[in-house]
Length: 82
Image 1 (cartoon, one colour):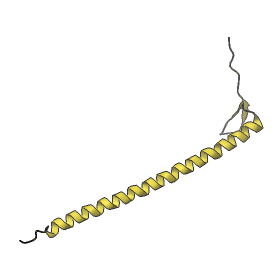
Image 2 (tube, helix red, strand yellow; image 1 turned 45 degrees about the vertical axis):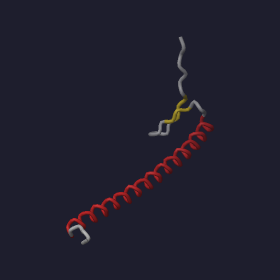
Image 3 (tube, one colour; image 1 turned 180 degrees about the horizontal axis):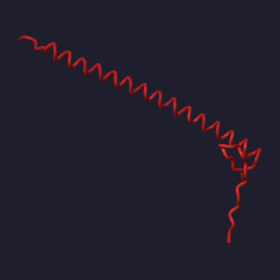
Image 4 (cartoon, rainbow, N blue to C red; image 1 turned 90 degrees about the horizontal axis):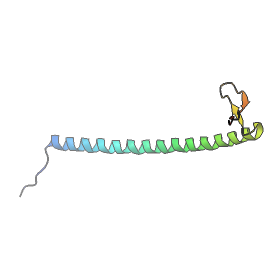
C-alpha cells in the first residue's frame, strides 16, 4: 500500500500557516510581557505619587488644594451647612 502525501503546494500552505500562527503566538506573548511591565511601572508610579502626596499634605496640610499648572496652594473651602 502506497503512502499518501500532501502535494508540495498543500504542504507549503500548511507549513506557512503554522509558522504564521507560531509567530503570532510569540507576538502575543511579547505583548503580554510588555503589558505586565507597563502595569508594574504604573503601580510603582502610583506608590511614588502617594508618597509625594503624603509629604505635601504633611507640609501644607491635608486641606490644601494644589494647582498642578501653577503650583499655587489654596485651602479647601468648608461647605456651609444651612
